[in-house]
View 1 (cartoon, rainbow, N blue to C red):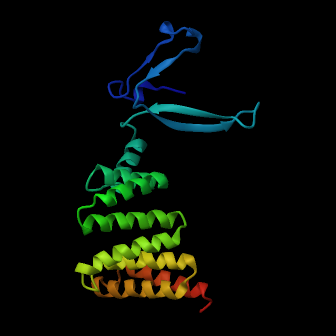
View 2: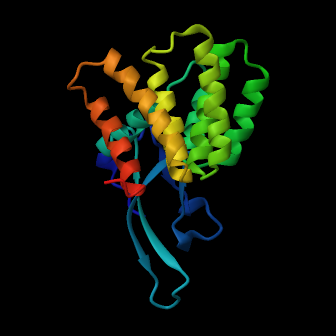
Length: 218
């Protein structure tokens, strides 16, 4: 572990050498605050034991450009209406799917309106998709679509991503006819709501082309 005092603010990340106060002063112990952040410099396998790895760390704080960039990126990705929704997004980002599912199920019980339920269904759909639980993912995406279609016209732009998500799930399940149907609905909406050179249209064309390729319909 290395400490470069010039690269951190001791007012933000204080630390202290406590070897003089330790029962084992030869260990040269350092006391860090609870919120200290360390960057990984290098990971090497120990020569004496192939099961052990040595991790070289260096202390850092919010003045570090890389850490600041990463922190801001995470903040952007986990934005939500309240802390619990942000927590759910963060759990999905780091792959803690079981905890995210438990949290979203609790939020679903206390949801006040369809807007909140729609958001939760979307997140549960995303979570199950990334876990390969495609049947569950379709179920939640369909619930999301049902809520949207209650109040929105059939060609509303916000329906396009939902149809695309459902199409992607069916595509991964090998149910190509259903995938094409959903991709087609998404494309139709995009063609109405977007300019002809919009990159989202290219994404839809690519998805549809990929399905035909997997069906060997060249």
